[in-house]
Amino acid sequence: MTGAVVGAGRSTVGAGGGAKALLVDDRQENLTALEALLQGLPVTPVSVTSGEAALKKLLVDDFAVILLDAQMPEMDGFETAVHIKSRERTRHVPIIFLTAADRDAQLALQGYAAGAVDYLTKPFDPWVLRAKVEVFVDLWTKNQELAAQAKVVRDHEQRRASTVAAIEDALTALQGSDGVRDVGRAITLLRQARDAST
Image (cartoon, rainbow, N blue to C red; front, side, top):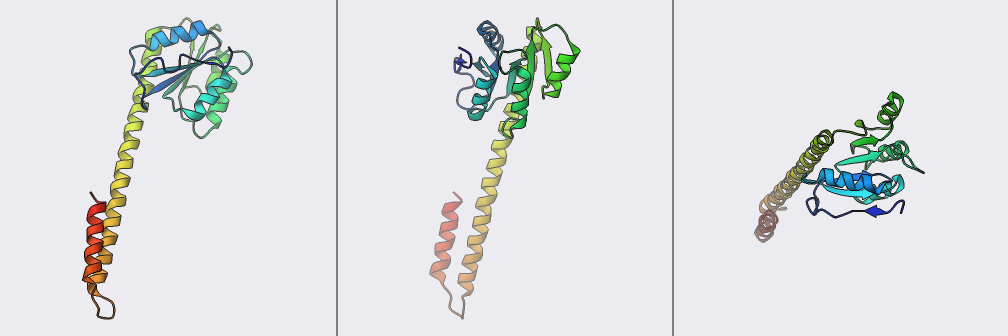
């Protein structure tokens, strides 16, 4: 079952472009616990059981946060994080490492060096983890809203520039070349500009 996608799409909260959290752990019971912990937050949990499966999911989906088990067979969390941070598409996705290992400053340092924003050892306070996830989901949502607003502004600027260009062409047609005015062409250009701006 290693590498399988488990529990993807169980929640509909984040469906249709909403925030998603990528949960990566080789143990199904840990994934189930994390999914339960995130219930009620405005995020869709997407669970995978290996680092390789996580990298594949990151090729096709955008995530607000990644909860990553540090110690997994084959590709561990540290190696997975290095791959995530080396990709342009995913380098800015925040990673929270979760591990059952005793508090080991060296492991925590390795996690931060791999690109983690936080490193929690089990047992961790579930309310602390929920709060951290909620902050990253909030940031992701605000970034999505800003990107949508920026697109609206760019589209508006494009339409305005097209309208200005059409008006300039219409004025040129009205001024005429060689003393011949092309009123019909000017009217056509102005109508096209009007239609394009609505």
